[in-house]
Amino acid sequence: MSRRADQLGGVLTAPVNKIIPFSAVDGFGNRTAVFLQGCNQNCLYCHNPETIHLCAGCGTCVDACPAGALSWAWEEPAADDGCTAAGDSVISSAGFGISVASPSDVSGICSAGVRRVAYDFDRCVNCDTCIKVCPNDASPKIRNLTPEELFDQVKPFFPFIDGITTSGGECGLYLEFLTEFYRLVKGAGKTTYMDTNGQISLAGREEFLAVTDKTMIDLKAGTDEDHRRLTGRDLGPVTDNIRLTAELGKLYEIRTVVVPDVADSRKTVELGASLIAPYPEVRYKLIKFRKYGVRENFSQTPEPSDELMESLREIAWKKGVKEVVIT
Image (tube, rainbow, N blue to C red; front, side, top):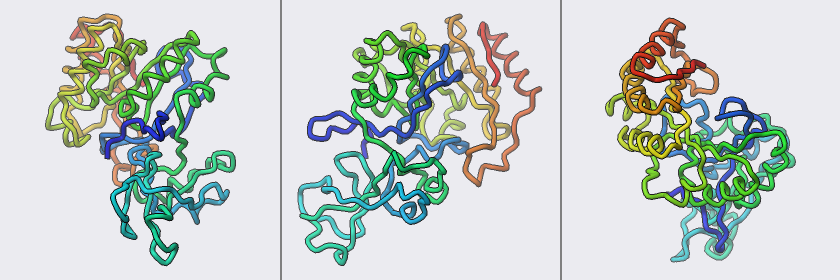
C-alpha cells in the first residue's frame, strides 16, 4: 500500500497519531511536535513500534478498551471492481486498515461495505491498552485530518512556541499533506521542521522544500550492510538527503542512536561527521539507546556507556563537526 496522504473525495488528509503541545527536543526552541502514523522502515530498536503500521482492523483492541473509545464501524471498500471476500484485508479510501466482516454479519458485503475500528478521541483516556494488545505494531488511536484541521489543532499553542515539528512514524510519506500544512504554519509566522528517516527523496520537491525551514535526519548506520540489517532499507537515500538539505541550508541536525554490538557506531559517526563537517551550522546529535518503549525481543539490549558516547563525540570533533550533542 502506498501511504501517501489520502485523497478522499478530493480532500487531502493524513493519519495523525498524536500531538505533543510543547517539546524542547524536536528542533530549535520550544516546539509543537506532530506524529503521523505509518513508517517505511522497521528498525530493530524502534522506540515507537505502534507507529509503524496503519490499523489492520483485526479488532483485538475493541473489547480490550476499558474506556469504550473503540468500536466497530462500517465503511465502503476501497475497490470498486467487485465483491471483497470475507476475511480479506483492505485499505479504505480514508486510509484505515479494515477487515471485511463475515457474510453472517451482513448480507451483500459489496453494498454493505466493510468493517473498521472506529476511534472516539473524546472518550479516550490514553491508557494505551489498545497498543499493548495490538499484534500488528499499529495503533487505532488515529485521526485522519486535513491540513486545515491539523492547523486548527496546533494554533492555540502558537503564542508559546517557536514552531512546528512533524515526526512519526515517517512523516515524509505524506509530503503533499505536509506542504499544505507547512504553508499554513509559515503563514502564521512559525517555523517548520521535519524529523525524518531520510528514505523519501527530497530531490525535486521544490514546493515542499520552499515551505520547510529545517530537516532533522536520522543516520542509523554507517554501512549498507548495517543499515539494511537495522532497518530493512538501503543507506543511499539517507545520505543523499543529508547532502541535499545541507547544501540548501535546510539541515538542522543529523541523529544517530548508539546501540552497542548491533551496528558499528564508530563507522556511523565517521560517515555522519564527514557529511556535515563542511556545514558548521549543522549539529550532530548522538542518542543513547534506551530500553523504554522497544519491543520485547530487544528489551535486553545493553545501553551504551558514557565512555563510548564520549569517544564517538571525539570522532565527530576530529572530523570537523563544530557541535556534538549527547542525549
